[in-house]
Length: 261
Image 1 (cartoon, rainbow, N blue to C red):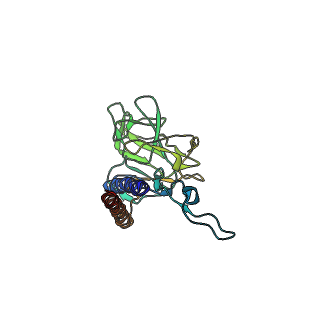
Image 2: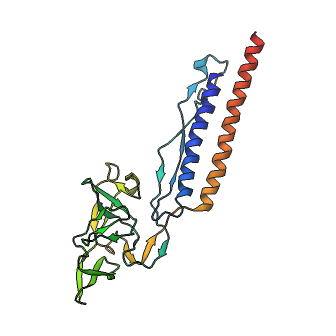
């Protein structure tokens, strides 16, 4: 009877986490450059029924019958597919169409990577994210009128200075990874390098293997509402089934104790 409790409990715990993950996806359906995640499950260890002294014997040539020990949720899988491009009216809104990440210099001296391209300028002309962290580029916009900034699909940046002259400011680079799924997600759409992701490879937008930049656009979330609702219904039903199994096991145990007494 305790095995029934354990099997049902593992199912309840796993599908509770699955529902939490679906809720996170739904909550971020309008978050710029959000990458949806999905839960997957695996069976726990099996044990042979013969080892439990049950009166079962396999037929000749067959494997001995086994019983399972519940389920377990794998680490969440994150999908880094392209989100829709959303038009804006800001010259410092940049979307990456294709592969690649912007590199961010964080305030603690570490580096992170993001596809959120909503950038701003401080009083010194430094280009910052919406969280106040610096975009890693070899130039700033000091003395440049922001509304005149132009960014080509290849990442070349030009702008008009205070004298009304058009000047070339510099080049925006992108970074790719062998295994994007191995990146560690932190907060605010930032990702950190891990051993699983591999080291970043730098290149210019439009180069082979790198996406192009789209000025006046932001990348939207790649969450599919219809798919998430299907997963939500399936997880709810699985959770209800496991709860019912837990209740049934409890009722049977109570009945067994009543009969013994």
